[in-house]
Image (cartoon, rainbow, N blue to C red; front, side, top):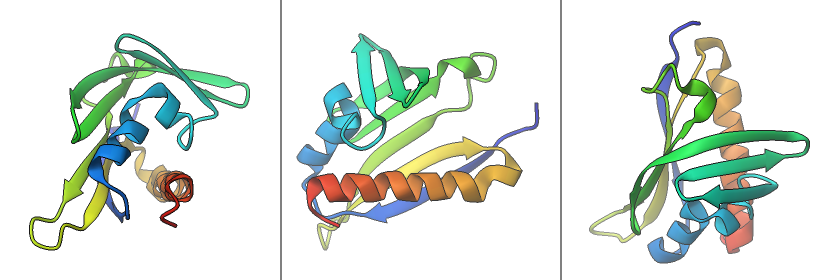
Length: 129
C-alpha cells in the first residue's frame, strides 16, 4: 500500500463552538451531515452511507475542541486518522473547523472535495451557509 499523504483544510463557519462540538462528536450530530446514520458503542462508531458501513474508533476527544477518529480497516496503519478541530480566533472570535485527514497522493483532490461537500452540508444544517 502506498504511503498516504497528510493534509489539512480550514473552513470558516458561523456557529458557536459549543454547538459545533455537538455536531462533530455525537452520533446524532454526525448523522445530520457526515453520514446517513451513525451509531456508537463507547469509543466504537459505525458510519452508514447508503448500503455501506464503516467503523471507526474515537481515539481522542477534547470537550468543545476536537475529535479524532481512526478507521478500523486501517488497523495496520495506526498513524492514519481524521481529526476535526474547532478553532476560535483570539482577536476576532471567528470560528473555523480544521480538518486533518490522509489520502492516497492521487486522490487528494477528490478527498478534499468530499470534505468541502460534507462541511457545506454541515453549514446548511447549522443555517450558516
